[in-house]
Length: 235
Image (tube, rainbow, N blue to C red; front, top):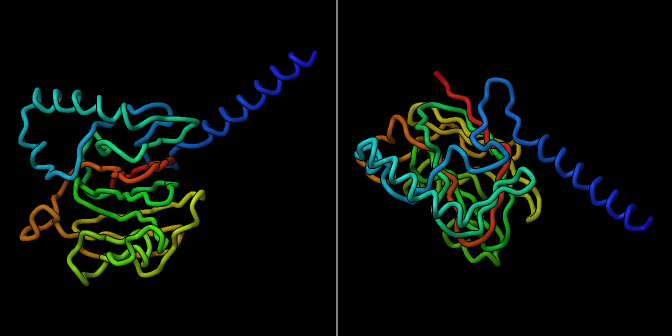
């Protein structure tokens, strides 16, 4: 009887977890899910590298590159209960598709000492920090919070978020990012922290940011989890 009860309880919690996972990663009307909640379909691996390197490849070269880099992302990225998990190492998840103007929604949860970001059109980045003093990066802006266009030039509009909106470790943070032309607006946990600011082209500041490019989820230094990653293209 006790064994049957344990089996029932285990099965019950398994169903609950499954239902909870399935409730996530369902896009709002008008949006498409970049992460399907099940596996790494739709992504390949790429680092902080000029996306023009990808565009210069032939179709066969690009296909081979994607196949090779997927070996790396399968070593460092996994999916559990509808959450996309990186171990703090490896290449960044990179969308197969390039995007122009868009609205991007996502949630993330991270740990002390982790450092991350969201690359827009293949360019770094909407910054994600460990914003505590113990994280050791206050001197380069972590004290101001996540959500800024950290790779913009010093004192450029949008480089630092207008307010610190990060939640404590263990809680989920949300981003709403709107990119139109060369301008970016960022809402973090419901508050606007970057207001229609120019995003500089990190790879060549003498020219505007590229008209199209991939979305990348950058991670290093510690585990980070993502969910509800949705995009809406703006015509």
